[in-house]
Amino acid sequence: MYICIVLKAFKYRLTPTDSQAELINKHIGSARFVYNLALETKAAAWAGNRVSLNCFDLIKQLPDLKEECTWLKEINSQSLQQPIRNLDNAFTRFFKGQGNFPKFKKKSNGGSFNIPQNVSLENGKLIIPKFKKGIDIVLHRPIKGEIRQATISKTPTGKYFVSILCETGDPIKPKATIKENTTVGIDLGIKTYLVSSDGKEFDNPKFLRKAQCKLKFVQRKYSKHKGKRTKHRLAILHEKVVNQRKDFLHKTSTQLIRDNQSVAIEDLAVSNMLKNHKLAQSITDAGWSTFVTMLEYKAEWYGKNILKIGRFEPSSKLHANCGHINKNLTLSDREWNCPKCGDVVSRDVNAAINIKSFALKNILSGTDRKNQGELSTMVEVLTLEAHPIGSAVGG
Image (cartoon, rainbow, N blue to C red; front, side):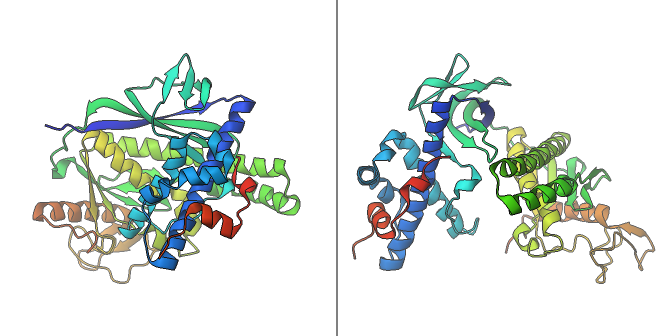
């Protein structure tokens, strides 16, 4: 019988030498170059001949591309294949309705590259192809399991990190039985980040809004002078906000998963909600999508359940006790008086209770209402479009 094994990623800081950092930057730049060129080649093949190139068609073209762009020979060959596989996966998600159409990668975003095999740790060093002497790594916590692959990334502030994916050897735990007394419903918000059906509240730290004064000051300074030091300072401020938000989301999601057997949430269309320009910044600062993703993979680790309800369920307008629907409820109404039973209804707690109730009804009833000629080659595209090769390489 096949047993599913838990996979976990461990992230560590790298401290490469100057020559190693230069080679890492070349790997990152080359991976970005191949990804963008493959995306353009796929688009040209479809536009000109209505033929969809898969990842194997494009990978076969890499040897010819290396003859045209000889600097690609410095790069680990498997790290050049991986961007094409990533692009193929991005298209698969797009056609399944699980993501947006793939976009070209920007150099300013830092970037990363993947090492699918031949990764090891020896004497405090990360050993990967093309780095024979190893890269110094800060092992702040022990690694568990057998190493499968690694991804090296560079932040906009110039720091290097490696994410090592390991097969822990632990089997995936069976899902817990769904019961009413071990299930909690949660309502995500902006003023209060999260309210649970049992009355617990998690305040929204609003890290981006708190850092807004400093960010605006440095942004204005950078807009006037475009200096490297100011750009670096701006990147440091943004990185601090991101790290603070991730820390809060990790702690909150871990607490919810460990304290409950099942968590019921609403299937929010965050991308549509961002079209509201008055709330877009607050929604982005909340990081709802990241939070839901954390809940989902941690639930897999610990054998817990994530129950989702449809985004059009009247979770806020329906009074959980008497069933009255308040059709006139607005976003600014945090409490309202029920004309049917006279109760004072707390909007967020009431919504969390309804989310739990709807999710359990869907599970018990067995329904889920959540969501009702000759082809161009990469070398030819490179030549025709006259790509500035030099600008595509480097950190």
